[in-house]
Each structure stands twice: as C-alpha cells, then as structure tokens.
Image (cartoon, rainbow, N blue to C red; front, side):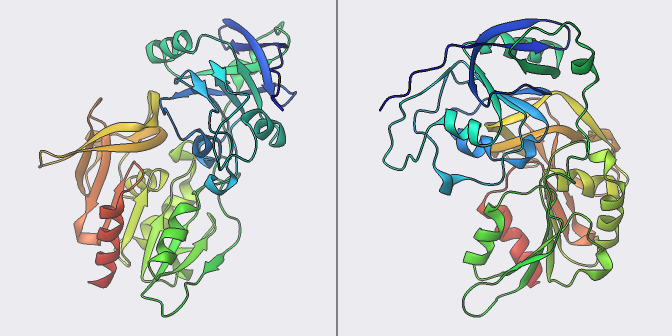
Length: 346
C-alpha cells in the first residue's frame, strides 16, 4: 500500500529569523541544530546513520531522497542528527532490499524532518554566510534566542564508546589493532577483522599507558576538536611509541597534540565528491568527508602536509615520519589502510 504524504505545515527557521515553509515528515517533534548541507546524490542511509552528524540538522542538496528506501544492513552507526531537510522524499521506494521508507526511519529514531522547501536557496545562504543554527518547528517562534544560543556540546561523549570491546577474526590473528572510538562508524573494525586482524575498540576515555596493541587508529568523530584536551594529551603520549593512524577528528587531534591549531570552516566539507590533492604528485583523490573544522595550514610545525583540499587548499593529511604516524581528514581508501598495516609490520 502506498503511503500518502502528510501535508501538515512545518517550518525551518534560521537564527536570523528567516523562515522557510514546508511540510512535515518524520518525528512529530521540534528540534534545534547546526544546519549543514551535504552534496551526496546517493548514500542517504549512511548519512542518516553517521554519528559525525551529532547535533546537526542535515540538508540534502540532491532534490529526491528516499527512492531506494531504508536498508538496515547499510547502517554505519547510530543516528545522531537533530533534523533532516529535503526538497522531496519518495514515499514509494523501489528496491529489492528495501525494508521500509524514509519517513518510518525518521519516526522510529525521533528525528523531525521537513520537505517541500527550496534547498537550493538555503544552500546558497549557507555558502555565502556560513553555517547557521536552525530550528525545525510546527509554529513560528516568537523569539529566536534559543536558536542563536544553540551550541553543540559533549559531542564525543555522546557518540564515542564508553567501554572497551574486542573483535577477534576466525583463525590466526595477524596483528592486534586498537581503535580509539570518538564516534566512529562500524566499517573499520569489520574491514580489519575480515583481513585477519584482532581489533580492540577503546573508549574515548582511554589511557595511553594501558594500550596494548601493535598499532592504533584514532577514529573520526563529531564536534569541535579543541574541547578534547584530555584525549589530545593521551594521543601525544602515544605518538612515537606505536604506529598511529588518524582519521577525521583523529587527524585533527593528532595535529593538536603536536602543537598545531584548528579552525572552523565557513560551511564545512560534507559529501562524497571532495577533491584531495596528494602533495608532490599529479594525483587527485575523490573522497568522502564530513567535518566542519580543519587544521590551520600555517600552524603545522611538526610533520609534513601530505594532502590538500582541491577546492579551498585546506589541510587534508599530515605525515609524521619520525614517529611512524600519519593522518587524513577524509574517509581513507584501501591504499591508506594498507599503508598503516605495512607500517605495523616494519
């Protein structure tokens, strides 16, 4: 049976009071978040279940979302976003793997959504003026103070692991890898197990002195890197003792541990089509990214910048050759994973 779209009015209100009228879907609730846009044309299931969107209202620039429904085996984590904005959603998805539709997913996870708004105009506002706070609501608010004052807090604490867990492959283990979970997706431990590695997932409150592994991966995660002083201190203690590979937030915290600085981007990098240049070569990678902060290029004193964003020239990777460590801002490909695995063997 085809579900008839709800035509209940709903509003997306920006912090300056600008309001966009659309229609409600998803959870019957209101929420405030940092409004960002993602340029993915596909992969909305991964977007919806990426913990790095903690505290944010996510807007899709691609106009039709939900055409292949929801497939739970494609989930990469627990949904943490505060709202979802689309131009149009598909109420009758068509895919042999489809289990249910987008509206049901949002309702099941308490996420309010809005459709029928001009996502192109809203994207232009963010690109020109920078990321803004916004509220999804059913009535226009009398005051915008709560929207203006909203801040993402305790992001890692609300997405990262709080307890240690182990994943052991069948047969003989090649090596033992520790992953510091700052809000990571489940892809990494599964991939490493399939390659024959034992994986220990460490909580964000880990202590460097207690790490027993042949190498350490510092995972991706949400929020401002500067508020994670204790995690940064533990990473600094690890650097030079074991091979270390940082991804996303892990990349930023590794840089902070070596005296570099970070800054917030105007509207962040969110999508699967971010060009990244490999420094010193003619190669450019097309990468998946989801972050609002970067390492300041001029602040890098330790290590060598290995990757730069092809659009804005921001830092996308750093090599710490004297410490057997490196990091990237984007989702790593197999070549980078193999580089880390080889580093552990040396």
